[in-house]
Length: 235
Image (cartoon, one colour):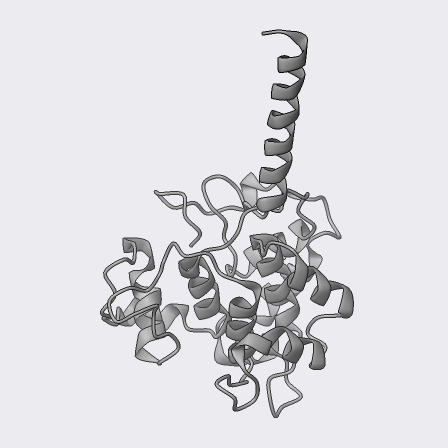
C-alpha cells in the first residue's frame, strides 16, 4: 500500500471511529454518585459489567426501574402477574406482569413488550412523570412533550433539558432523572416521592439517610455496588 492510499485508509478509519463514538454518546458518565445512591435503595442495581452508564437503556430496564420507583417491586415479585408478551426475559417477567396488570404498559403490540428496544428520553420521562401522579394522553401532558412538562415542574433545569433533547439518551441520564425524581413532590401533595415510598414501607427513613451519605464518605467502587444477573442485564 503506497503512502497516499495508506493516508486515505487511515482518514476513513478515523472518521468511522469518530462517527461511532458520537452515535453511542461516548462521553464520560456524569452521574456515578447518583447511581451509587440509587443502588443503596435497590432502585438501580447495575449489571455484571458494572453500571454501564455510557450505553442506551432498553425498555425492560426502564420498566424495572419504574416498578421500583412506584414501590411495586415486592408486589410484582410476590404476585407474579401474567402478561401476553413473548419477548420478555425470565428475569423481567414479574416486573412486566406488574406493569401490565396495572395498565402501565401496552407493549409495542399485542404480543411484544419490546424488551430490547432502546428507550428515548421522552419515553422514560413519561414513565417518570407517571410515578409522581401525572398522566399522559393529554390529561396532564402529551408523552411527546414530557421533557417540556418536566422543565415546567422543575424536575429538570434548562441545561439538562437541552442535554436530554439533543444527545443520545443513556443509562447515565436514567440515573439522574430517577434520583432527582425522589425529591420531586407527588402531584397534588407537598410530600416527595421518597417520602411517599417511606410511608408505603418500600424502604425506611434510615436507608434513605444512608443513601444521602454516599459521596460524603470514602467512595465505593462500582463493582462493590452491583448486584448482577446471570445474563448481565439490568435488574
